[in-house]
Image 1 (cartoon, rainbow, N blue to C red):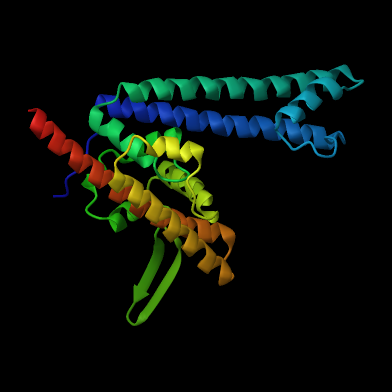
Image 2: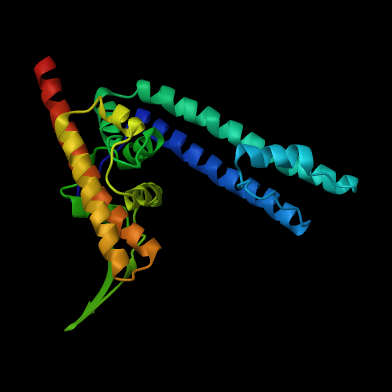
Length: 266
């Protein structure tokens, strides 16, 4: 029989919280689309140099966009209220996630901190990965984790014929979304900025080396695939698959170190 990892109550609670934030982000995107499409239908476009959904954009909508018809003015106010409500909702959930991380078991908290050493993986992304995966060491290898995320090529083989298609998408969709979003950061040349340096200050030298290796590996992979004329979306998906390998390496190393610490404390 194949053993199955069963999350405890604290782990399930954290997973519910990060999925609630993901739902809030989707609702925010819908609210923004409703408002922007309403303005486009009415021929209202922001001034030159004002990018969509920046602070200047919202100031323009609030103070410079008006309609003669009362019904349209009410529609505008309702759509704008929904956008602001979604923003406040996400801020509350971000704060709740930050507080929840402080109450997680030491092993889980250590993995969350270590994963933030990776470029493109901030706190929310790291918490989502840990909440969806549980114990990273339960996967025997990086390829097994990639299969769990559904970011491996589908295959149909019969006799001597061998056909490979797109990714299977049969795994955890929440995990797949997070790692692909994080993979976009590796389009840029390897570097450690102020924010990333601050996140890496609390992790071990081994974890920092893995994170630095990930930057070089994935950026090189991106440049090679783009030079071959591949679609950018497919290239980033391929990078997300390899990023899972580095996530597995960091998770296994940190969990092993935590086990040693627990045995010594006992």
